[in-house]
Length: 207
Image 1: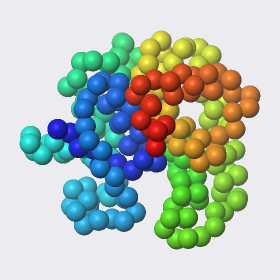
Image 2: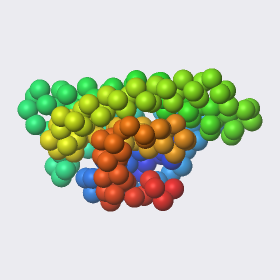
Image 3: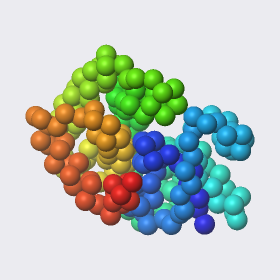
């Protein structure tokens, strides 16, 4: 049985959970607070980052959300999330990386740092300047997602893909932390409403 070590507000953990849900892969959740840097977790993943997924019976350990998603994409035929032609698959991967790297860096990571980690770890007050910059960046990123959704029903093309899962994971965390202004982003708001209604997303909302 798969065991997923994750933190509920880690967007990369969320991306993996969405993919596993879409593919119907069973697993158990184990909460891991990465800032605690438990010796057992560092031994498992020297980077000290979530998510990590393991199957002890088969002696399998997978680290990093992209690696995990690619593994299940290759081994589970149901609900292919990197599909289409080679060019289409390249675009899906590009967008997934764009959300994982740039949206996370400019929006999600800043919001998590100011509104969660400071409160839990350092007991410090959030920096209003950093929050304003993150929210300003979020508006610019949603301008681009509106553009993408003007062209297709989904972020990466005609069908649901890993690009949508990566986007939903980042946006859901930013939205929960109050960093998303939905005004003037009707296309992305409509897409996000559809994502939240999917069975794979409902466990995230319950948390």
